[in-house]
Length: 344
Image (cartoon, rainbow, N blue to C red; front, side, top):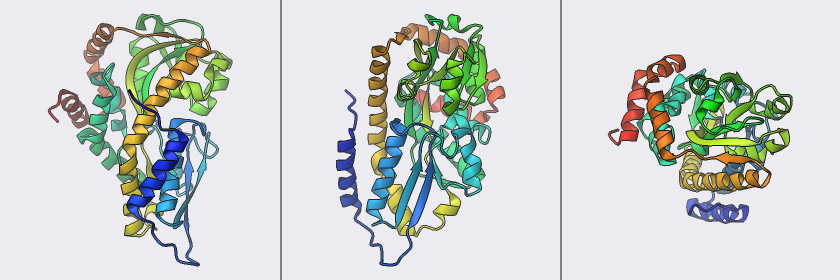
């Protein structure tokens, strides 16, 4: 059973990590460097908890040479806009969802390929941590002039959520206006099942839902629960595990260049040492979020594996259209298939 890391447990792990890495000395009078980090989800969201925990570890392990300030709930930028802010030096760190960066690096949409639909989360992690992910990171770092800290944070399975119409099969999506977080791949899937895509930044979703701007949306249990979207009208969810959303932790090259090799190594090593725990915590958080939603009246439909396999096969027949719409490179399509099939 996956187990969540409580805040207390995260605190204990912080102490252990600092002990393992040692504490760099901060000379008296030496100017510390402050990381300004922008996140567009709430402080209670699993991404925010993980990033805050990581930055506290960094501060402890560097002896205060690197401090941080985290701006939650889109106070500075929505993920859809944060890349420009990183590029212009208006913010030092962010961890945007890969789906929000597809306008800059289309290959970020590789997780939308049907080969991942309805598959275990490990299939996506193998690809993200392997050759497909490495190809994406190379492009992200070059185009945004950032340093990606390491393996990506899991958000979790993305599913369908609706306000008025219960989804018993994907046929029920036909004609519905469905909010997409961005990216041609998600819009392609919405269109494939007969829905009408509507791209809306996450901080604007509660108001848009309550006003009836769209009939449903694609997101995760965790995101729905932390935003308490049942209060905005969410009543149903079709849990088809269409893809795994992941966040890319990145620091602007302008900030990264200010760090000594010693400090930058500490930051990379700390991320590598903690990513497995952050992913486990995310999985447990999704489970808790589903229970919380059910307790607040949300009704869930769980399709059978045979149903998921049939949908995957149908989408696979349309993969060329997806690759064209999302501008996916032939290389990322090939590497993704090889990764899932165990040949990459």
